[in-house]
Every structure is written in structure tokens, then in C-alpha cells.
Length: 412
Image 1 (tube, one colour):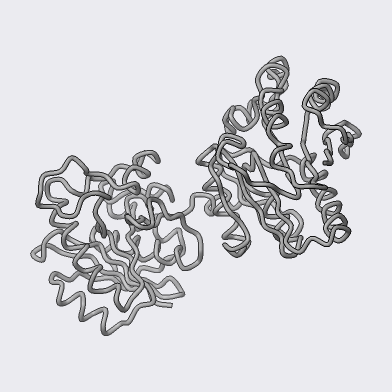
Image 2 (tube, one colour):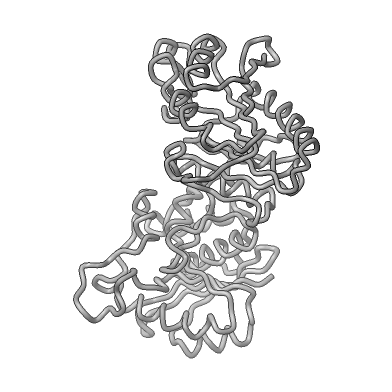
């Protein structure tokens, strides 16, 4: 494995940082100036991947940098903004020359090489490494803590940023990344924050599930019923002779339910649904970590069933936010701080999302389909009334490992 990191300068008169990174994370860095020198180096080294710090595309609707336009941001740039990562608009001031140079080099290189756009500032922020403005030694020590061996004694700022570019490329090849922006317009590759909190990894039914702040952690009670439900689904699939059973993991959070289904049920297909962008990123990371084929799932950002149109499923798994307003005092302070309300708060009596879910779920269930819905034990009677009001006729409540009602199974 050989990755070339390029911290591209806006002009051939300025230094462009270069890093050649191998599979052992040994970084050989130096500076070049002209495009010709860069292209000659690439022809000589023949890297597996080229990671460039420069805009490699224009915003949709803008064909040139020369004409006046009010369109300055790509979706990728807006995503950086949402992540609170500082950057310069790619069509303004000195960034114009860098953008022109980056696009020109990309058009030459992509005919023969895999080229990605990266942003070292974003990588450094996500991995909690000081940017070069905070001091080159601090940046160097931060990179070395990642396991990178920097072969040059006193690398300059351009070279350290080039090393960061190459390391981002290494993460890309390892599948430990997020691609932000629109694929057709142009994406920026950044590290997945989830991969850098290894203490937040849990194992479940042969899966590795990574958890980051801002996404609801799977509880032991949920794991208990999910394990039993998956066994139940296997028997039902065999009984009905379903060749390609379709599952819905709604209020998906980390996506651990859907990932466990895909890992344990042959030929299954899962739609993952959540409204929170952080959960969407978490699901993507866990699918990559568990090496799930993209042909076996779809991730849908939706407010419950809003964006599911006429989709129907053999099995629906739902773990909605159900902590009641009246019982909020029971929620641990650590949960309140690390997991936002959208993950666990269910409004008055904790039934806000359960009501909306049960109102629409029957329209998305195939003949002989099953719904597995987690509830709070104290909600049993009220949930039963909702089920009857919504004309669900076949349902049964089940206890968790602590002997408390935790699950309702609904059959069509």
C-alpha cells in the first residue's frame, strides 16, 4: 500500500507539501513547486491512492470561477460548517487559484489513479490534533500518537499537513472514514469520529458496534429481546419460505439491530431509518465496520414513516424514544449529558412516538408480517389501548431478563 498526500499550494511559486505513506505508516515528506514535478513524482511512485488538500470540484450550478455568481458553497462545504470545522470558501479570494489548480490536477490524474479530496484541518480537528497554527511540534506529536513514523527530523507545516492528507487516505482505504457532500458534485473524505473511541465498542451477535456521543447506546434489555426476536424471525422465514425477507430498523440509532439482522439472517435486506444526522453517520460507520454489502441495505433519513412512501416489510423492529415527561427524574445525568433528548425523551407518558409509530406501522407491514416494539414496563396498559384503537388484533407482551414487560410483538 502506498498513499500520496498532497497539501497543494495555490501557486507554483509556493511550496506544496508532499508525503508518501506506506502500509507501516512510515511517512517520507518533502516539498515540490511545479505541477510537472508533482506529475513526474506520481508517475514514478504509482501510488494506490492520491489524497489532495484542495477543492477538486465546483458547487452545483457553477461552471467556472471567472464569471460572477452567488453560488459559493458545495454540499461538502456546508457539511463542514455543520460540523463546526473552519474552512475558507473555495470560490473567493486566493482560494480561487487553489481551486483551479486542484481541478486541473484532478482531471489529469483521475484517468489513471484513484484521487480523493481531503482537508487536513478537518482531520486534525476530528482526531483532536492541534492545527499547525498552534505549533508545529504539537501537530507532529499528535500525528505520531496515531502511529505515524515521520522520517524527516523537522518537517515544516506544509509537510505535516501533507502527512495528515496521506493518513486520511489511509483511513479511507481501511474504511474508517465519512464521505461528506454529494457524490456527483464532489465529496470530501474525513475520518469517522466513531473509530477513535475504542472504549465505545460493544459486541453483539457476532457484530462490532461502535458508539459515539450523541447517539443512544443499546441497553442490555434491548439486546435481550432483539436476540430472541431474531431467532423468532428465522423460524418464521423458514415457515413462510421467504427467499429475501425485508426488515425495517426504525428509530435505528447506532443501527445495531439492523446490523445484527444482516449478520445473522441469510439473504436479509434492511432499511435503516432515523431522523438524526448523527445516527445516520453512526449507522454508516457500523455497516462499514461489519463489512456489510451495500446491496443488502438502504439508509433513509425520515421522520418515522414520512419518507418511506409505499414500502412494506416482513418484519419491523422499533425502539422509539419512550422516557415519559413524568419519569424524566429517573434518567441518569450521564445519559442526559451524552445522549440528546431526541434519542430517549417520549413526551407526556412517553407515548408521543409510540402513538405515531403504531398509527402508521400497519400500512408498512406485509401479509403475515411481525412488529417488535420496545416499551417502558409502566406503559403496558396504555399501549394496549392504543393497539386496540388502531385495530391491531394480534399482539402479545413479553418480559425482559429482569422480569419486566419490555416488548410487544404484533402479528398481521
